[in-house]
Image 1: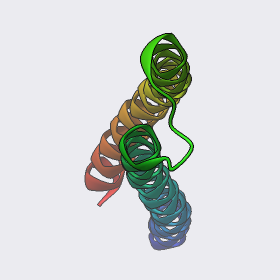
Image 2: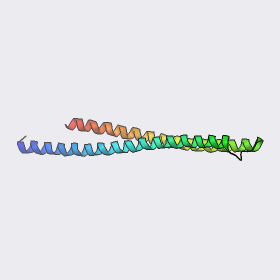
Image 3: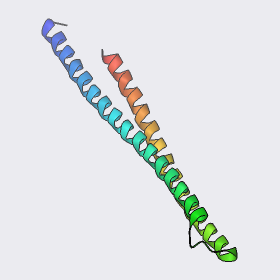
Image 4: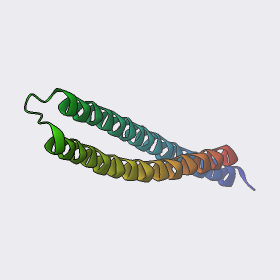
Length: 115
């Protein structure tokens, strides 16, 4: 292999490494956004749970007996519904996060092979 061909091959590999590094950076940003979304969902659910419990225990219009039980059941059902939705979203985020992390690993391995 002559010197020009070797130089061209090195430049080609350098461009590939640069492209892969950009891809890796983009995946890192996506990973950060997914982790932030997961934390936001956790906080949302926690805040909502506190709100529900406060409404159940501190509602000045909280009635007694059967009406109170229905109110409490309704609030707990609403919380349970939201909790299921949040858990479903978190599952999807976790799956996406695993895919991103896998892609990051593969990209890092490609970079290592090229260097």
